[in-house]
Amino acid sequence: MGTIRENLQLILRSLPEKPGVYRFLDEHGTIIYVGKAKKLKRRVSSYFNKEHDSAKVRVLVSKIRDIQTTVVDTEWEALLLENSMIKEYKPRYNIMLKDDKSYPWIAVSREEYPRIFATRQPDASKMQLFGPYSSVKTMNVLLDTINEMFPLRTCRRLVQNDRPCMQYQLKRCAAPCCGLITREQYQRNIAQAIDIVKGRRQEVIHSLKEEMMSYAQAWEFERAAELKQRIAILENFIGKSVVVNPLLTDMDVFGMEEEEDCAYVSFLRIMRGAIVQAHTIEISNNIERDREETLWNGMLEISSRVGGLCTTVLVPFMPTWMPADWDLQVPKRGEKRRLVELAERNAHFYLLEKKKRQDLVNPERRSQRVLQSLKEALNMRTLPRHIECFDNSNTQGEAPVAAMICFIDGKPAKKEYRHFNIKTVVGADDFASMEEVVFRRYHRLLEEDKELPDLVVIDGGKGQLHAAYRAIQALHIEDRLMVVGIAKRLEDIYKVGDDLPVYIDKRSEAQKLLQQVRDEVHHFGITHHRKRRSKTSIHSVLDDAPGIGPTLKKRLLQKFKSVKGIKDASEAAIADIIGPKRAADLKLYLGEKLD
Image (cartoon, rainbow, N blue to C red; front, side, top):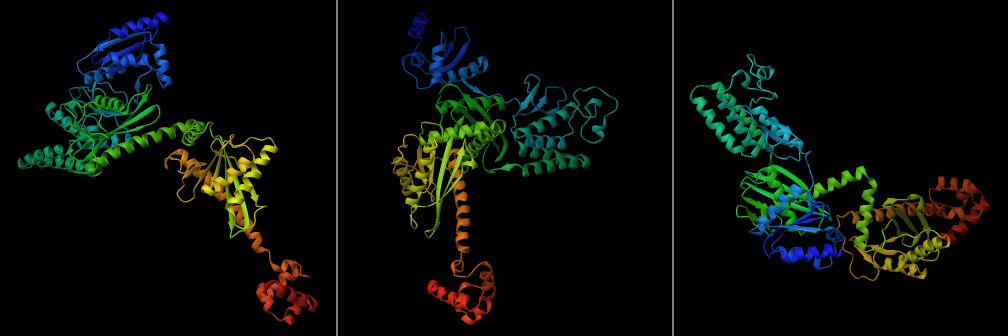
């Protein structure tokens, strides 16, 4: 190992302070990482001269056995060369663009009489390519429009015939195989179809109108009518396009969404104020890179796929480099800013859809991801696999109860749900009630030697939280679990000892899990409280009246409708139902209870 380190140090000392690209090789001579640098010596030496926080970088450095470099004139040239080498060598530790060959493209074959068709196997040597299209439906609508406008051939092989096929009879092909259309006319149709694909639809309409007028002036009305129909088809298609603002000039728009090891770069192409193309690529970032470089890698890749970018390019933030032929803009407000936000939303939705697909394949993956995000948000030592949540319910101090629900691995464990009737607290004292039920719950778990939860959630603010924490301190288990409170009004999360709430993105999966836990305990507690309260309300003073059983109680209520009706009735009227002795006792009893 010492010899290897010495060889690398010799290479480092000989590196120039110039822009360039460096390549790290492993013991087999395989390129495992390609990077670019403004100053090669300083950048490459940094890998060996300091401790790295990232475990991936440390692993990379441990595998380096040789270093190769290429010097260029500018940092921009270094970026382009780096991008090219990453695609060529596909190094293990580089930013890798996820392959999306499954996305369809519109292809124009390189033939004398070209075909226009969809393909998922793009080959630039055999076809002119446009795309890729993230929406198959959008692409098919565009192809259907072109096929409806232009009678282009669809057969895979063009064989000279004396008699045209059925496609010609249906007016779907101009029959170049039979010489019924000249090569110039066919190529003109193809050129207009390509312009439509590229988004130059108004120019095509203008050209068709001029051609239609020339035929009309020459009294070739049948040909003029065909062109008029093409114009109507194209105008109908444009009317269904996503128009953002007819005044916006041609431009490309980028947005980006990032997570730990991946970034998602979304692309929109605006032509004559309409979105004519949308695409998102995924970039796997295996070694730490700043977001500017990640965005650039995505922009360069999309540029190569769509055949170059427009002059005007809108981006969410300004990258380090700015090519002379691109007018990069970071809009702060107005229509352009809304376009960037739209591109960012597309990247965000792409990420969400990817997670949904992963969750369908592996449901446990989602729960682990959510629990990990909750652990990080609350700065917990362990993963919150076991969560318990408490809630109090009472009506003006009557029928006080509490509920506890349990989630295991992010899912409700309903067999562990518990109800508590408050025993030691008189009146509506939510804090004391919370302290009682939390103490009872965990005192019992300790006595039975059962597992304590990783996280305890209290449905309430700081007062409820501290009451629960007093019970946990009394049991000396505060070091074995974490307690948080979720405020009812703003749904803020509080930890013991913190004056300010814990910041958790309201849209995050971690926040949604806490809300789900809180909603579950609320529903469970309210249901139990309603049942208990209804039992209490059904209990009547007649139940304790001397000599009055269920049958007499029922007959009295049927006659006098209510307890108040019985009290207001005469003793003689009551005696007619239950007899004079019971009537006298009942009148005396009700007088004592209700007065």
